[in-house]
Image (cartoon, rainbow, N blue to C red):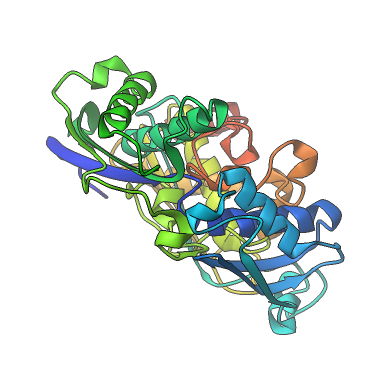
Length: 397
């Protein structure tokens, strides 16, 4: 069990949708969305590489859907804002190479109902997945990663909403928030780092003023009272950015995608993977469980771990850590979780409706930027198990 330190500073980072790795994630997830829209049984493991005026699509996809791989990639790039040749990466002129083949039949028989040794849908791979929640913010996310996301998200929203006023902003950016914690609770922001791609003629004061304005907007005033150390474009210049400045790959921002370094990570990336892959679906389920546990008042912090064997439906282990904040005996949490939540791959798909994003008004692409967790609108953020958990907890009090 992790101990709560009396006082420490913790830091998390985020990146914008224009970051090269996030460009790759969005292309992979847009392809997943397109496949599932026509064929919910699609098996997708799509990897994207993007660099100076080049996109490479590769991976394993088995689907009945008719998908314009190249067209989807170009549309994503255009919507992000890479639409001019002078950026070194342009939706209309970049080269797009497609190297996609079908899923291995050896994997397929383990994750398809009626095939393989167990005749039920098993996990698409072995591994362990984690979910986390805490009561530091209304989103039940750690404060550092939540506010780091909000900064770059707001800057991107401004850039798109008023491209004339903010014409000096380009798509690529990163943020970092450091907060002082006392007795496990965030007290104040100690440092903010923002690096934002810009036009050659931008005046540094423009960005400094804008970033400070955004920080004051997205971070509550109670956290801005102990003197912030600012680092805004600390190298002094960030003109060359995006895939032209740094090659992007799907799945390289796994800490940005989750909890900003708080808690544990199983190592598996999310984007480009259909929900038969427990790397993605079980991590979403663990977040769903942890968030409902904290929202029910059964703990102030909660981390849920599950582990699977490839082709086997039931998890080989379930572990719940409340970091000493739990209101129940430690052994009660696993029993309650196993009773309330179906942790088989098929049970997860059904509970969270992960094969039907479009029908339920969300998309994998939209939620692969600015964190996969902490925003409403997706089923793994629902708080519909709170009362059930409270009822089950009564017998252990």
